Length: 496
Image (cartoon, rainbow, N blue to C red; front, side, top):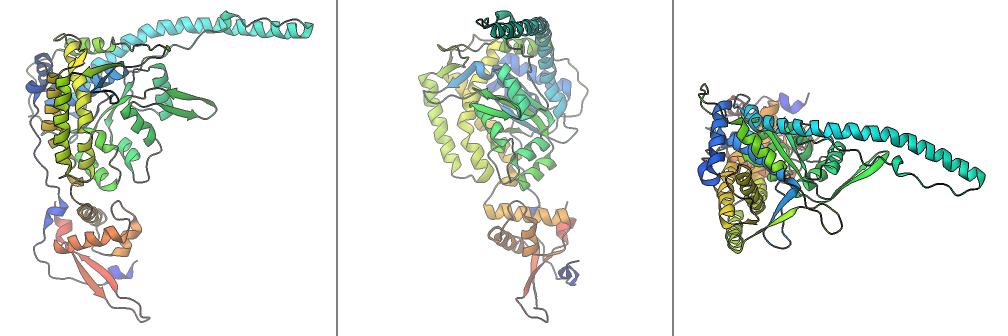
């Protein structure tokens, strides 16, 4: 046992400033359904939310993630030459276990699975035919090898390999959504399904924790490219590497507030988290559903999005069809980018990184919203992103997702010293510390507390808030420097 923890000390404590022990949680913004979505989609989102006992925000978030993944690499919005975005949307739904996260996602994922099932049944017939050809090809290959051996032995010209010995590439099975897969498996899926796919998980905490831990997840480069739709290759032990021209994968899942808070306090890497559009509304009222939402509406729309095909370039490679912005839409985008630049001046850390991605998010959502309106039969297929498309996306991003991010990432707001102070307060409560030294804190190597340059400012803030108090411990019999021991205000452990 550390002898310092045995030193009795019960100082008088003034009223402490407890704000560091809790985040000042902003209220969630109102969801601008009618201002952003077409009338058909706004009505469907409301009905699905009531049916599932969930906030419409959750259904909206899941819908954007699924629709963006189905569009995938078939269409990319392009404001101007040199700038194009994949429509992949990363959505994280935040709420307690009873808030309806999973039912809300099911409102979109269940119809998606039905669409996938129909595709897989059709692909199964093609796969059965291929397997029969593959068996014939094995026999043809074997017979050809025997004839080559015989020709060589007789000194004759070896015969050419017959076409029947090549069954062609194995037809891929459609995978519109996966719940868990290795990077290697996802690469194989993407190689056979170049339009992209969706990672959908009930709980994202474990996946995010692995990707965003301080040391860096080993799969992190893959996922960073999956958000940007960039080329990627995956090396495989004992097998040929897999090359993907445009790695585009959407992400959808839920997380509990406590697990998000824990993740935010233990990660020093905001690059991945900043790519998510967080949604954390108040829970829906507890009531029995009085209407049934139209499942056929969303299923038909998803089928229509899935009918989009990737064009082929002059060299025979599949690529996205680039949907360009009109001049008016570009002008509106420039105004939006200037607004984002101004907001960056008042932000730090994770929020600063999030704000920096808002123009790209608005560009992506411009296409997704336009294609959704076409998929529901309420508009023609967009061949350009018009100013009305972008304005709706900008309204959703600036008026909803930006304030929602401030609510969701409140634990990561403030200066580095404030982040370190919150991390230290969290560590004290988590381990039930009553006394500690700065050196003991450094040994734990917690996020934001790895060195004294971060620990000392945190201690000053906690001292000023009367959450801890410095005790000068005299040197021992053998001399040496005085020990800096900190006593913890009992109110820290009593606070809820």
